[in-house]
Length: 491
Image (cartoon, rainbow, N blue to C red):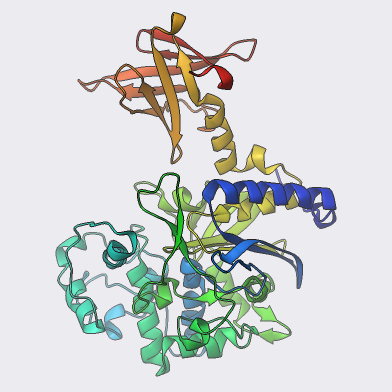
């Protein structure tokens, strides 16, 4: 069923107040210091909202000009850069990776091609993020015991990558490994073919024509900008959780994968271009047929765990285009989107190309309410986000089930806990948290009352919640039947 778009209804004050409440509640829950959002329709910005502070210590408020790191939303810019080279006749998406870079891994009869890097289907598993983890050791004050691989120059990258031949077991185009390194390789190809730096090329071909004059990569024009948001993380081990500012990490090898900084005011220009067949202010940024490829499923992720659906949501047939995830049925509409997160920064861009509607969320903390870019689209459709957005629906379902449960006369008590989208039982007699798993019986996970856990010999032990006619919730676990206690009667 296709839900109709009603912009005028969405912009009514009472609905904007509901949106404000939803996002402020989420900011409080995630402890994100700041959030900036923008909504575009056709060629116009119809809404901007800013919440919180981009610098807590100086109490600098977030504005639509605040610069945030957009993290992996950058991948769509890198893809657009590659397509600009295709448009100029400089490269083909079917060109072999080894024609440009000294990469020897892969299958001689079925080589890795540029299009495989764009869709994360090169067959190369993720081997770049460990560098992030190494950098995180100092930032978070923890020792992840990750070996320090030499990774300072492109020669280092080529050596390490070519040494990983035994890990390249999937032929290109067969399996989806989300891979930041693949996009860094694309950035290097852009540099080699254009004979200029990656940042210079993206500024000249994309940012400047889109009037994104303050957007850019982590260079002096960004570091000196007073609107630059300070990134924050939760201090490790703090209880209650405490936000602390951090420095932006090393950017040498993440520019093309996630290193762009931008603002709501400038990202709305970018979305307008996407929603108008590559046209912005009567200037054609990219040919419509090439942009259409970005917005089309180039690889449908089916095996083994449907990563695109897990990361971006289950909305009909889902796959990956070029630098963007694509869903064919978001409540009757085609949805094109991408998220981004990187140590103290998060972003989410969601587009309905056929309706020419786009939403951008930017924050200086991760996690943040970034995925609720989809919730804004739901509200534009006249749907209640708390009843239709999977993240919110699951949370409210879990909230209903969590709490303290008591057996007859309190002879045993079991606490039900929700963490990271999963439920756990904690019998007070043993004090250990036991994970429980939703039963695979066709019931939507956000309505499921039947769960199970494993016994010590590997058997499946049912865990069932029931709700009686008085809305009293009961827990049936092992040999026990337990009654959920009211909030003021949990001791």
